[in-house]
Image 1 (tube, rainbow, N blue to C red):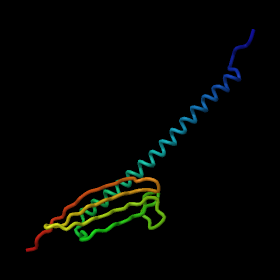
Image 2: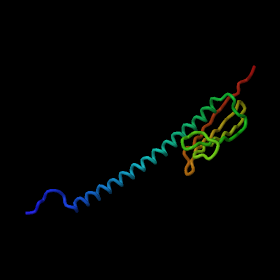
Image 3: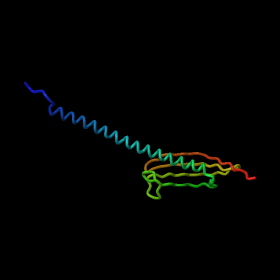
Image 4: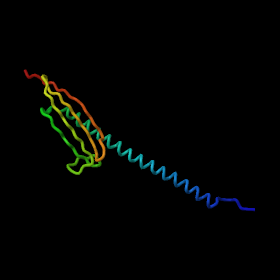
Length: 132
């Protein structure tokens, strides 16, 4: 009579192969999740800095009378740098003078080497106060 205690070599090899395949699939899922998380973080910070520029512009008492563009460079941790940036935030301000004040169109965009992260467009009207 044969001793049937334990596993055969073939059963062990098959179970190791199945375990390896499942492990590789799970590892790839973790890698994809990490990449999505980093992209989401970049978009969140781009949105933060873009809306921050817009809110600072709207709160400013010294608004420009002519159109201009600002470009800010950021490193991989979203710290402002002067050169070799990973992220770029571009802010365009168009000024239109109307009878009672100034009408501002703000366009803010942020992008990295491969993709546009955000596009923000807003308008702001400032009425001139008559000095009497």
